[in-house]
Amino acid sequence: MYYQPDIETMSREELSKLQLERMKWSLSQAYENVDFFKRSFDGAGVTPDDLESLEDLAKFPFIVKQDMRDAYPYDLFAVPMKEVARIHASSGTTGQATVVGHTARDLENWGDCFARGIAMVGGSDESTLQVSYGYGLFTGGLGAHAGGEAMGCTVIPTSSGNTKRQVQFLADCGTDILACTPSYALYIADTAIEMGYDPAKDFKISGVICGAEPASENMRQEISDKLGVQYCDVYGLSEIMGPGVAMECAERGGLHIAEDQFYCEIVDPDTGEVLPEGEWGELVITTLTRECTPLIRYRTRDVTRIVSEPCACGRTHRKIDRLRGRTDDMLIIRGVNVFPSQIEQVITAFPEVATQYQIILTNKGPLDHVELHVETEPDYPIDTVRKLEDLKRRLEAELKANLQVAVDVKIVEPKTIERSMGKAKRVIDKRGEQA
Ligand code: DLL
Image (cartoon, protein in one colour):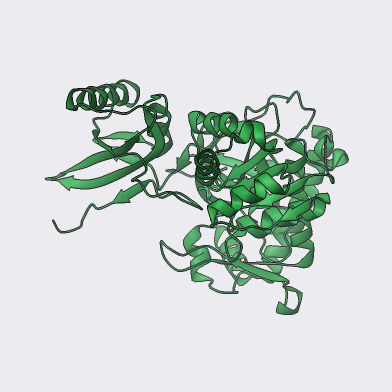
């Protein structure tokens, strides 16, 4: 039921004590060993000695993604290279890659964090875990793998890709738990169905551990129904560790933060002020145990809120709500703020429409123009222009009613939007491109 019951069900009082002790250690680890933190704390007029309570953390300056890029590759490391067991790096598609190092102890903690989530979907040392996240510099594959090994599972490291073979392993090797992105889970489920299986009946699988990108409630439901599984949402980011920073138990209603390892705050993305508990804002994370790359108040740009009501599962660690998206993914359509996941939630309520879509942003004069490409489901053939126009009109009306935005819907043929085996690319920004 639990992987580390002593830690996962610790009283709030004990947990706060542990967090404070570890936070003091982490601030010193950063301040004494990393030039960046020495300069940034000194600039703000604070030293680790100024931390007497957890709330005092708000006196310390933030670190942002650009600081990590500037420190490329090793300037944020707090230990000598001899102690660095592995490095990971973010993809760098939006700029210079950011490199993060892990000591052997950091890797062990990471495996433990992910293993807690395996227990949350009912896994044990008797489970077979198929890891269909990509292996490599991306943290998905190796992070989930470490969790499986920590738990003592049989791990099948299929990595992402070769989807028919993924299905074959699910069918033949008795996979209990599948770990991959939600868009890939859906692709695997659809491929299995196309191959003539009914995964919910034919496969042993009982849980999926999906993360690395947002998924709407309808998309999660579709994955759970098609595969016949419990859905566990896993959150993480390469800067902070990788998958396992927070994971969702069977009670749902949010993802338990590994609070013995990470301290979370929610701040106003514009002012940086810490917001009262329960309010939505930007998640800021401080690592409490990381030896190689301690990060103090890292601005994740992820939008969520903290859920602190006690959970029926017995775990005492607070939760973050399911992520809405990233502050930098937020579309501002004629003044209205919209996350792609909100668009997904609206369109996936239409049975005629598949859970695959793309948002194309262009300029029309001075205004942003939003075109939404959606596919029809093969089971709902749209054979007349009138039916097609009717569906388009209903989709546009529903988007307008729910999100107050005018979106130009384009209905495309089934299976023409590119499928993803990792993180799906939902938004294509062509603003600023020459016509
Ligand atoms: O995506 C780590 C990971 C791998 C998490 C596998 C979960 C499963 P990065 O590539 O650094 O690391 O991307 C991190 O992905 O800041 C979020 O914006 C987004 N993200 C991660 N998990 C979720 C989730 C990995 N469960 C960025 N829901 C983060 C929504 C997520 N977005």
